[in-house]
Image 1 (cartoon, rainbow, N blue to C red):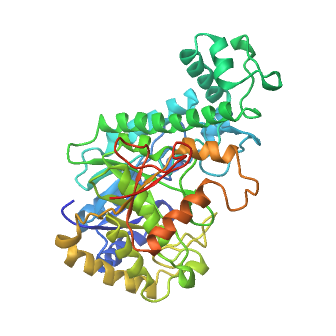
Image 2 (tube, helix red, strand yellow):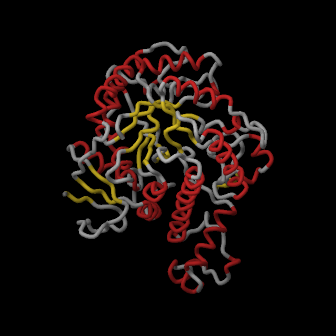
Image 3 (cartoon, rainbow, N blue to C red):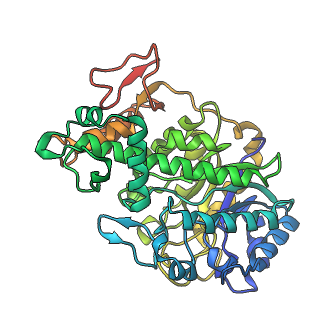
Length: 459
């Protein structure tokens, strides 16, 4: 990257008609040089099946291009339109709690062939419409994709097929998984039971890995479609997220980030963290360390982080700058806020953007203008800044599954991410920069038991 990106998510669909020109003028004053659009508004793009409306996307692309602001377009597949759920209710994901009801985002079954058919259609239609627009510098696949605890028909059937391929002989399956215990033995494939209630941790872990593999396949599937239309200079990215405990806390159990990132040109991430008196720097360092490890030697994009956020997150004076430069110091080449304006209705009304609901030049926005000016001035020195790693941490989704299925006597504070964060935070507190590895490579020094959990090594 030849320069730093300073950006925001922007939703013209949610705003009064006259805001676009005013917002762009303020963006230029802020130093914003990139916006993310389109990933949340499938129902606006396709209000009825096969009927498309590109009014908002077209006018944003034109206005941003005229202002010299680059655009990242997202595939709008993580929030399905009501007409699709009404016509094909089977696309809604089934979890241990039953089938999801329409309303929230991220309630679709990503392996359902009907959902895939409609998702491919909207992706191709959008790509064909905007692919040659000069404002577009890249594409974001979906949004914070996970398997959403999917235990539905297609997920279960796919898992059984994967076992059939690996175990042509059922006797070997029974032996390897220890299925004689409590009469769990399987002697006919058609008798294979639903996995969600299994008491066999090995089988549960295998299913969990299969679920994550479907996320990897889904993002690779979207990437392949997008690349049919993308221009050579445009990148493909995705905004990974982490285990959520009121903020970005730990390794994401529902996605293998290392595997899924292989489909991307640039790794992207969403990092949210405590602020005010609770700002430690640990969360930014943690998120950055994992993300820069996904594509070693490359910088990464912080595609979402908070500007004001909730009331208890509104940064103290100087904290927005501290946060932004902490991302850059971890190896980020972009800091992009969710979002530009505060939304005036619905679920995230009080998750405040860079602008408050009155659109005024508030103190957080004023501080952002100093960041934008400094990013522009310092880009030649900071655009390709690489973190120097002192320590390697071996992490593993499989180890997480295993540990969390065989919890220690007192599990409180002792599940995988609790332990992981103790090590990571201790390294941060002692000024060590870690790099994360998804497997133990030849020559690495691993602690005993590293195949189950993870290890530390000094270079």
